[in-house]
Length: 341
Image (tube, rainbow, N blue to C red):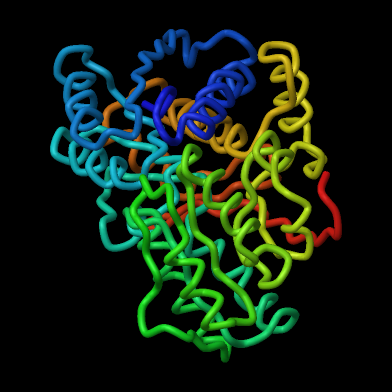
């Protein structure tokens, strides 16, 4: 399941395309484990929580799937993991990044080999305080991912000696198209930096355009995650000087898996892999490696212990999944630049 047509379609398609290539890499092109074929049933959830939850139930009850994987929206992923748990099947989450998926909402059927928002905040907070300043505001999209990521940044920045100029983060609905009231509030506060948390592809571009036009970009640095390459190319040069993390860029890892992903992605989809292609690839690897350990048995009693403590060489390097609870953690790349690429 992934968003192929909704507000997070850019990310969902990247993950889905990476997943397909990851299956081929992990099975040497056979799409079989222990002689048993792997059949993939895809559903476009469009990041619609109600429709997506219904699709998950249909996949289990009507299609008879043994494993659920994917989901781009954190709000939907929080529902899907409960459905998987109720039906006693394994769910591998990603690219949905709320820390709550493998935090307070975690259950034994939920696994993730992609990063989460708490890991993002831990990487960025110390660097930002040292290099930008100590006074911040958080401006976030008002849904599960934005809320969880805001909480992660609040905890990380406060723990490292920073402070916030508002008692609570500033939240805006995902469908906001006029950001003027928020811009005025931010300009009045004059923070050292803005922790900018926004995932929706459709309104995200509007946000960036209005922040630039109304005097924020270029004057108050963003502390944020970088979008996919095609979105970054559209950004006004006013964002230069802002600080961001990127969870994957195809030019950085030097691994056989990344070479395969990059070559195959260009061949199949006409361009390089992007932000969440690696997440989909790693998810497919984890499924295959887990099934190898079970002899091809996808049942939860066999697959759960196989995935706990699982290690493999992924696109970004070594991936290790802990034995209980939180996300598996691969490498994190921290790199600054003074210009767009």
